[in-house]
Length: 96
Image 1 (tube, one colour):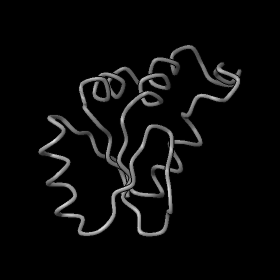
Image 2 (cartoon, one colour; image 1 turned 180 degrees about the vertical axis):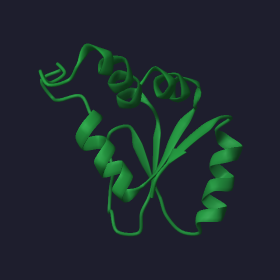
Image 3 (cartoon, rainbow, N blue to C red; image 1 turned 135 degrees about the vertical axis):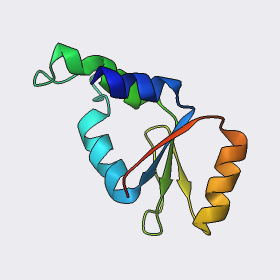
């Protein structure tokens, strides 16, 4: 988990497809209570805090909106990724 935490810390943004975004959000978004759930181990909290606060871009033609510090990416994917590369120095992308 330390490896992925470090990778996310050095990235300017995360790029997700809809399915991965929804999966990650359900697992790693900090609850409204402000405290991590009891099932989460102490060793997972640095990863959870890092991904929770990271800037995210979500590629989707079916979602109408996103939150969790995310922006929705629509239209031509190639052009959208080129624009992100121009704005963001280091990106880390996972899944579709």
